[in-house]
Length: 217
Image (cartoon, rainbow, N blue to C red; front, side, top):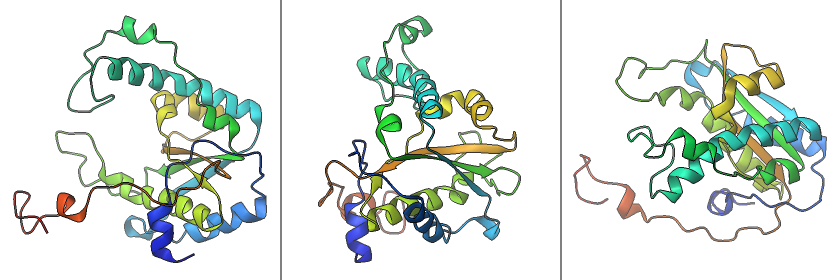
C-alpha cells in the first residue's frame, strides 16, 4: 500500500473476524515495526505475544478496573482518567459500575503487550510538576509502527491501556520485570470493517505559527 494511504486508513479496530493471523505474518509486522526510533537508539522495547485464551481472559478481567472508573466518570460528564482533574465520583460509585470485559482482547487473533525498559529511557520531564510523558517517545512510535504494519498486511488493531491501571497484577501474570513499564495492550486481527476514511481535525486547527497563540498554519 501507499504510505499515505496506510496512514490515513489505520483506524482503531476493535471487532475482528475469525481469520487467523499466522506467526509468519506477525513476525513480518514486528520485523518492520522494530525500525521505529527510540531515545539514544537504545531500543528498550519488548513485546509479549499472547495467544493463550486463559491469559487473554485474565487480561480482559484486569482491564475492568480501569473501565469502571472510565464509565463512572463519563456518566458524570467528566473526562475520564484526566491527570489534571481528579474524579468527581466516589470510590463506591466506581466500584458499583458493572464494567464489561474488554471483548477485543478475547476476539482478536492475537494480543500484544508492549513494554519499555525504564532503565534505558531518558525522561527529561521527570522533575516537572506534571504527569510524565517523554519516556513514551521511546516506545509509542514502535507501537504505532505495529499498527501501520498490520494495516499494510490487511490486518488491524487498537492501542489499549485499560489494563495498565492494574500494572502490578499484569506484570505478575506475564512475568514482567520490575524495571519495565507496560505501555500498551494491542489486540490484532482481521477487522470486521476496514476503514477507508478517518475523521480528523484539519491542519489549521492543530498547527500554529511561531507561538501557541500564533496564527493558524
